[in-house]
Amino acid sequence: MTSYVLDRESIKLNCYQLICLFYANKEIARHSDPTHEYPDPAAQLERAFFPRELTRLLLSIAIAVRTLDDQMNSRRADDPDRVRYVANRDVVNKRHNCMMFDKLSLRETCNKLIHASTVETHTTDGVEPHKYDEYMWEGWQHAREGDQTGEQEKTEAMPWQHLSGLVRLGGRHGRQEWWLLLEVPVFVDAVCGLLEGEA
Image 1: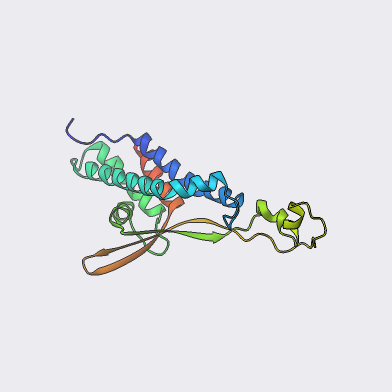
Image 2: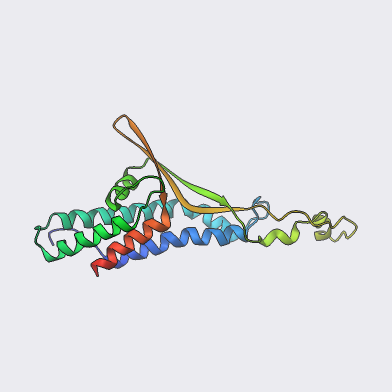
């Protein structure tokens, strides 16, 4: 063994787990009490493990992709594997823009992920019906306690939020601050596109 051996299937698995974190959040938020007054087991687990899992997955994927790129770039220019890799990487970089407002290559995106000192997930308002919508009428608390004398007028739907799939990254390069907005689904597509081309 003369260099790191990268398991491409493990990188893909990390991509799958990363995107699942965001897709699962929407359903957890839609079925949990937004006020946290009535604790939900899934929401409690998410609050306990989401930050560390997000950190682990983003860094693991970014470091693996950077390492793969370094390994391929170190090969001879006429190496068939390198030629195929570079051609596929160019297609991925042209097709996928992982940052919402800034054009960065996949390698540059991974660099920013590795060096970010700020990592903030963004939320958006939920538009689908919430599980607690059925309780959104005046006097539902009285009815819940067996008192049927309270008013039962329907009010607005339960307001709720879920992760948008955007992650704000920030850091410093020398004296210059930088801020970027990572689109997680696009990042996952780009990484998987790079690895599929390697198969």
